[in-house]
Image 1 (tube, helix red, strand yellow):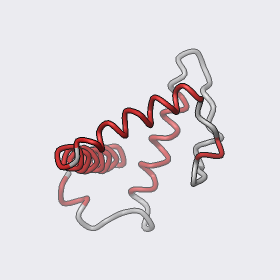
Image 2 (image 1 turned 135 degrees about the horizontal axis):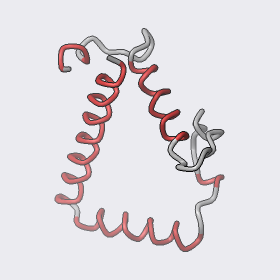
Image 3 (image 1 turned 45 degrees about the vertical axis):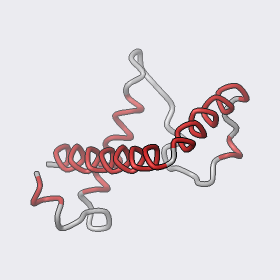
Image 4 (image 1 turned 135 degrees about the vertical axis):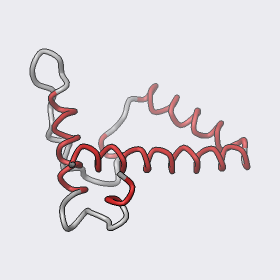
Length: 97
């Protein structure tokens, strides 16, 4: 059940971000150019930690093992547990899966 709720919530969030970006990029073509320029500058200058405005509990997660997927699995499990906890669950999420 945790995995299904996680997949649903992740897909819903991704769709929302894609739709929002699409609307902004369609309305203001300059927005798309700014995003490309921003990514170029960050890649060229390197990503600096002090640029981040928040602290994530996942920053301490380092890849381990031979396939380097264990860190990703830990992050997925963290969010899956949060989405099904009393603190992170939403009433509508169970109706949709």
